Image 1 (cartoon, rainbow, N blue to C red):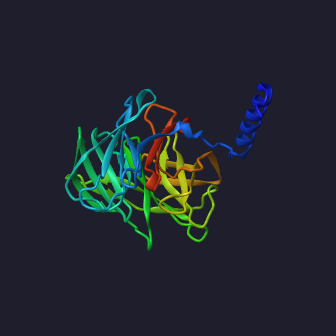
Image 2 (tube, one colour; image 1 turned 30 degrees about the vertical axis):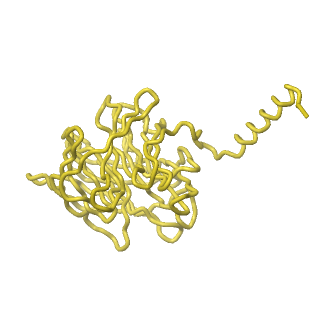
Length: 305
């Protein structure tokens, strides 16, 4: 039986309203995401903008075998993306999970592996060269790191990173410390402070309470949280405003976590492992590592004052 046109329109409207009612508050439309990888070797584990006004960013791949990609570049201008793999010269990291530009040193970045080794690298076009590497301080028993951020204030530099945590029995641990560099480039960390953090969303046995962090110009700390049920999902994640960080004129770092973190957006179906506030913009660039489903990027207006 052929339905009248007005009946078809009513049915379509009903389906749309049902879908909207079922979507979590703040959930993003799936077509806002742009795919940058198609398999478990090409997901986005961490992001670093290539500079103010740039429409490209570097992202790390969490691969473990020799010869597999460690670092890629994504250009995301005009609603389309292009991805290029970078050659990696030097000691090959095992499971890179985060990357951050070194303030005031164009082309240099710190990349963090999950077990706590920080690699200082120089990027020149399609090549990345390891300059030095060193362990994080104060590595805790069982720590698994997926996040790293740098904060520059009044000539002082600080680093933030976090053990991701797992489920209700293990909150994330957010670490912070002053950061300097030896004359030959090795990162040197000062006194470490730490705070425990439990995500508001998602909440499940496998929740990674902090899968990445970024700091806004005003010092707000943004964190992604994520959960998955295996290499084929299902995945779920969110980005939240979890507190503030300040760096004094003498280099002292202070982190204050919010009593009630604000969930800025939820993303069912995606596992966010990268959050990067873009320089000179109110936007954050988000990246996912969706395991066998590859990786995706999109922007969201989370980094304003």
